[in-house]
Length: 409
Image (cartoon, rainbow, N blue to C red; front, side, top):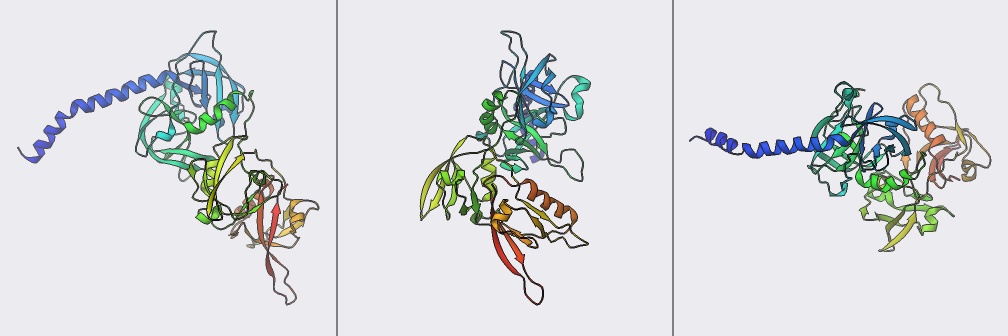
């Protein structure tokens, strides 16, 4: 028997196992389908027998009541319990008769996932469910974990095909449990179709938010942060970017016991490699949540407990000169009296050359507008910013660069 025939024989002998695996996948689709929910033009999933539904905030379109249809064909009225616009989660409640239950899927353990684990996505891509009254199923694997994709700060990356209309639908493990809610995709060239990367909100994050979403009375829930920390600056992906440079007096950071010179090592049990990872970990928690922060201080480790605070937007109190021609250097046109910018010592005529250690290189009107918008909208109460400005010059004098510390209040 030559090698080719031997290979074919082995493949034939292995065929029953392959058939069994296929049957298992078919059975999984049959199990999952009844708990799927068509919501508006998107998707959702029932996660409790009393009719608790999860979906994305961007799917519900700001309404408070809905008519939804389950994967088994049954229709229900549903009301909005609560929504998390930043985290892109929403919870609905089906209006059931007394004692009535509906098919549901259990929330799984996303922390138990490993790269390479098989996953199944259930959804309504491009509204196909309107045609045949059934959701679609796509299979793939977990591509990456603990990823940050815009406001999805601790999401699951999967090559399981998801497209517009899959939003809000479940990402399922091979035991039929919901390990994530699909919500974003990676696209190219402006085309709204999948390029092999989908992003799902993890079940870990969902479990943290469900009690708050249920108690929100149809309103919004807020994320938490630790205001009052200023960092050493430099590139955010570098390890030294989590060294505390400054702590604002009277802030939540000061109340937690942070000191200048602290290096943040862990939040709860999650290692903090750099400031990007720091923001990502905090991004999954709601306001009022208590976290344990391990810092390195004076050669030893200390554990601080911080209560996360909802961000409060505030104005820094400055206006920039409009760019002319190809000159996009941001220059301060006006500083309002009594504002953080004035208190920090910013002056009209200052050229802003760096923010928190990062040099600015604005090359277009779009980049200038984005920076200007960030100055007007991205300051939260307790934030500490260090502006490096170029001041003076003219009449034979050389302009000097100096740091201006601004604490948003």
